[in-house]
Amino acid sequence: MMERAISRMSNQIDDVLEFVKIQSLHTTKNSLLDSVGLSLAKINKPSNVKIHIPDKGVEFVYDSDKIEIVFDNLLNNSIQAINDDGEITIRFIDLENEVEIEVEDSGDGISDEIISKVFEPLFTTKKKGTGLGLASCKSIVEQHGGSISVRNKPTIFTIKLPKMVEISTI
Image (cartoon, rainbow, N blue to C red; front, side, top):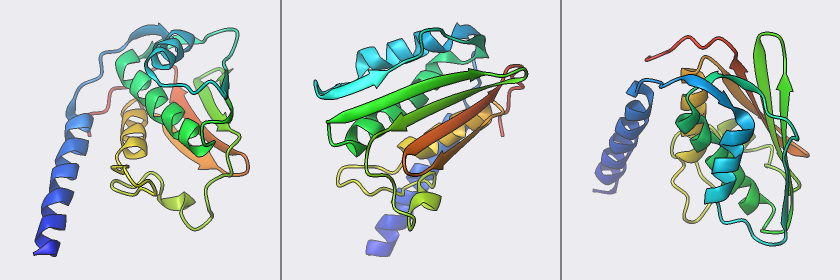
């Protein structure tokens, strides 16, 4: 009975992730600084959390709604990782053919045992987590033709997005 429930839930999650992939991108020229600002306006930032953002944005073509979802997830995860007290630093690195985005937090880091699993659907270490946040980030970034990775101590999520987006519906 439990196996059936888990299987059914897993299928529902797969359907949600597939839905995220299938939705076509609505790309226009946007500023990453604007996207971060919209995300920051939505999140619940504790007073003991300091968020450092770049002085200057990078403008290029991407789906701002979807990239905003990525920022929402990464910022909320960072706030939880630093236990509502610490610093988060966002960096934009404007390269010739791509843009790198880094989100770093001052938390304790991700244990070596689980760091390779953080982008897997349904993987979570949180009591109320769904395991979909980072999986959807990965899906959205890959749909833009980019990549997302994480390294530890300090925890830094790095997103690489090409400046010329080829839409992927796979």
